[in-house]
Length: 284
Image (cartoon, rainbow, N blue to C red; front, side):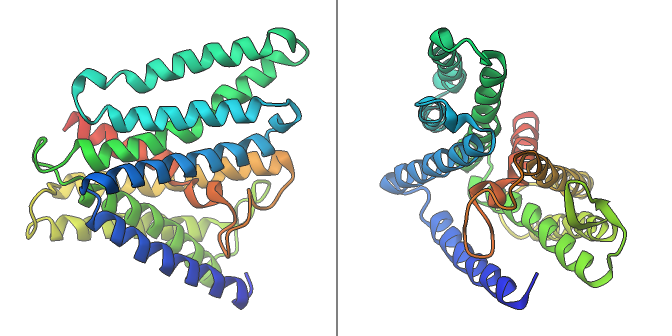
């Protein structure tokens, strides 16, 4: 990556970090909750559109738009499900009826229907479910619910996942030579992957140390180590998974954000790590 591209990535990352901090600080304010939810649904819509373009779903008129609508409604459903346990099944009810709508769409488009159905439903789940679970982490696990501060857990998820990307990038640039998966992502190296993995564990451990001084964030030493390892591993799997989709589509970036690519490029690792944190909080 050239210096100019690295500068763009740095500036975009700093702006994103400032926006994220502002969002987290005010995330429990009534109207801000809805703004965050609509913003997340918007990210989901763009992500599904990018996926639909990569998967050639745009060739079928109206199909990508239908998938976007279903995904956005599911994300909204995840948010509503944080109001009360009565609504906890709402996102999956919306997914079920969305699946029916996708089937109905294909009734007069039989040629290639199986492939199109599989691509459509996978794309919806791939993008919408992890983004919806981010909202569940942020709002369901708050100080008034099970003693967890959702903002801190979301911050933990984002920091540890992204530090994996950063560690892998700089570790690979400085010391890497042996390719990790050259057919998927020529720039990724085994050394870089190891740096990313170790970086995730270190920062997870740092959160464990900080947890002694703040309320609403409970993480034991053992939990910090295995969660860090899981996030460090799955974050890179998520990155490679999106690379697989892009290579099959023969494109470099899913869209165009300065220095970052597209929304899918920005979220790829989080799409695999978010469910882990949600399941951890749900079980523990």
